[in-house]
Image (cartoon, rainbow, N blue to C red; front, side):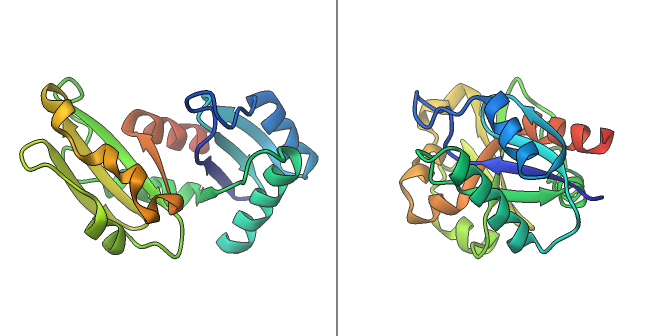
Amino acid sequence: MPRYVALLRGINVGGKNLIPMPALKAAFEEAGFEEVRTYIQSGNVLFTAPSSSSAAMTQKVEEVIGDAFDHYPASVVLRSKGQMRAVVDRAPKGFGSEPSTYRYDVTFLKAPLTAKAAARDIPIKEGVDRLWTGTGVLYTSRLISRATSSRLSRVVGLPSYKNMTIRNWNTTTKLLELLEEG
């Protein structure tokens, strides 16, 4: 059966939308998903499920979470193991290679938002921020020494932000590693 990762947005951040990972794992298992595993507190759930359309699987996962945690309006970006492999393999050349100089993030986009449309709205500071588009993702980096000048954090004020969830590069590559273990 195919392996997936559900990337939840907006949980366990700043004391809001608190969802314990053991309870989240249990909700997935009760819904019939198999080989369920969570990774860190930011809402990453790896699981195995029968093949389904991405839209149908996303809807099912959001319903499971919404039913289990009525205080959380579930919004999930779902990626298959193959899609996560493509995100890592298609990263810009050298992306993630200078972690002491740059902070690297991957912004996962929820359909119907496209990378091209999202990139038009993302504010960047020349000489500090960099942005590249990918399939269903944006790759961003910011110069650590000038992080206070970065404009990337302004993304949270955009209307399109509700269709995004951000993971740092280390988390992104670790999620792929965990998907490939299964």
